[in-house]
Image 1: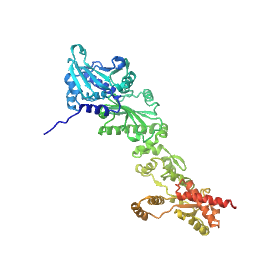
Image 2: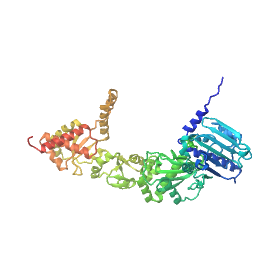
Image 3: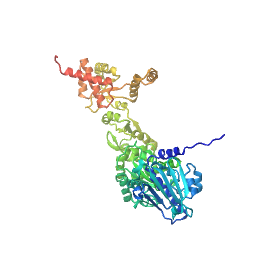
Image 4: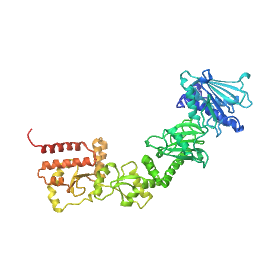
Amino acid sequence: MDRTFQVDLRGVVDLLSHHLYGSPRVYVRELMQNAVDAITARRASEPDAPALVRIFPPELTGDGTLRVHDTGIGLTEAQVHELLATIGRSSKRDELGFSRHEFLGQFGIGLLSCFLVADEIRVVTRHADEPTVLWTGYADGRYAVEVAPAGQQRPEPGTTVTLVPRRDADQWFATATVTELARLYGSLLPVTVRVGDTVTTTGGPPWPTAPGAGVNRPALTRYARQLLGVDPFDVVPLSVPEAGLTGVAFILPTPVNPAARAGHRVYLKRMLLTEHADGLLPDWAFFAHCVVDAGELRPTASREALYEDALLTATREALGAQVRGWLVRLARHDPRRLGEFLQVHHLGVKALAVHDDEMLRLVDRWWPMETNVGTLTLAEFRQRHGLVRYAASLDEFRQLAAVAAAQDLAVVNAGFTYDAELIERLPAVDRSVLIERLEPSDLTTRFDALDPAVELALRPFLAGAQRALERLGCEVVVRAYDPVSLPALYLVSRSAAFNDQLAATRDAADELWGGVLDALAASAPPDRPQLVLNHRNPLVRRVTTLDDPELVGLAVEALYGQALLLGHHPIRAADAALLNSSFLGLLGRAVPGRE
């Protein structure tokens, strides 16, 4: 036998009013929303009907209640039952005409938000020539409906909502608070809203709402200053007709954290939906703050966020394309201004360029990058040096830049965010571009080999030097290279770095994973880091002539430590111990005598 669900109305009211909404302040928005919808419905048949919403906080009513009057269409007794006392039945609302496209929301569920701040809600409403109806709802789920007696009939169509505040909600009914909330949520509404005698509406948005309308930049700059506290770098008009969206993107004048989710101000049919809408722009456009009004985007049930659907996805892509178009126009018509923008927001542009060919061309031409031959754009670097040779990390660039420059190797520092990815994408948009990642072996091939006789004479020294560093897995070689002032260079190829990382991981792994890593180590190429001593350096030449094996070992260990430090290489525990022992050993040899 079929049974009917038992619904605890008090629990449903508590769920919707206390858990659906993020803050009690939304009650003012919902009251204005219902009032505006009622006015919109009346004006559909009476275009000249008055459009006025009046709010009287308890300080003005004098009886401790808050009242909201509107000049809308009002409700019949049947509509009161269907719209104010029915939760979840949308089909009847459609039949009655209160779910049409022009309306901000739907009667009924929004009114429940008032139970956040009130224990009792009273509605006095009249529809055209129908009698005035009284509806009273309570926070425990009860309600009562009756036709008003003759002495309480409204003279004109419209509705008055009265809230009886809860004892703990007095702060939400203060006149200053109600005025502030009415201005926050309803400043752009197409009707007049008054709190007492204070008008809280401004007459419409400050951005163009018609196709082809001009942009009043001074007015929008003042609006941005009021909204953001700063003058925007620029103002980008936005329009997505399929979403009924118009608005502006304010380009922020200061750097922002790319990882921080940008919050955008979104109005829905001129009623503020949220000040912190997420996902309106693509993630890369974190440098823009949007203020928009949309007619077709769907809100969530609480009307405090946008519903993620295909239309919102298409709108996000369209808005991203418009911000991108602004960047392209800036590059074509005002390169100096583009340079100023890139200095502030280069991360966002580079993030877009990772996936967008047009933005990659913009970065290639306009973004200056660090190289070992000065600051150049990638386009300028190619023009001067042809091949784009780059160091993929900041440490690699620091270790090798000066030595590479001395060997006439121009290198780009691609160690900053997105730079390596952008360089590696260049051949995809221009097949003539040649790129190459810098390897330490590129340097050693440029170093001069020693005279065979000199090499033969250095064999005893190399044998002693190798014994000193063997335990560290480092190979010692002697070459001649510039700059002469550099005595030694520590070079680690990518394969050698991989082997070092593999060994460190193997030491920390358990027996199971240790076996797997042993297998990987067995298949890895036998490549070791090199300490390349510079035979052109006077100190190195003096070290090679030492005949004291202990002093040779100390000197080579000291050169090894210095090369690690100068190259910004990571210092392992064994390296730190060697640095300490070599320093103390050399100091002990330099200060002879008895204790």
